[in-house]
Length: 117
Image (cartoon, rainbow, N blue to C red; front, side):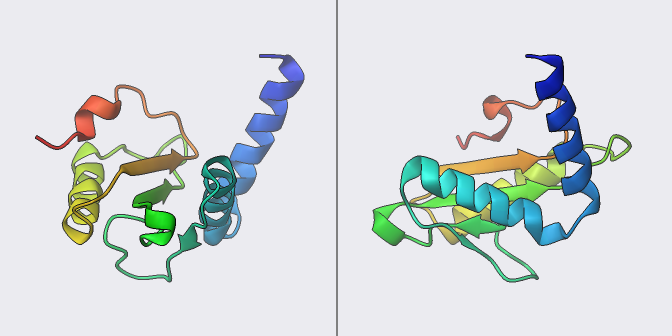
């Protein structure tokens, strides 16, 4: 990765961490929606059943996106994330994928932490 690329990613990270909370959710929904060619809607504020955005069954897709604006000092909560996954699966048993988008690299977290038995 070039120095310029790292600098730009750092600027984006700072902006997403301190800016409008909905910016990360909207950006993630737009980018993933374009990648998968499916409409992804951002949820309203409040309890969101394990996701800030999702497909809501559109185009027969069942995806949820959870966005976390972590700072360098934010304690990482595996239990909290597992609860988000559990809520999403309870809400939609046909869930294809639960996608975590974060402003911080989450060391030690991988797909195996959040798979359902």
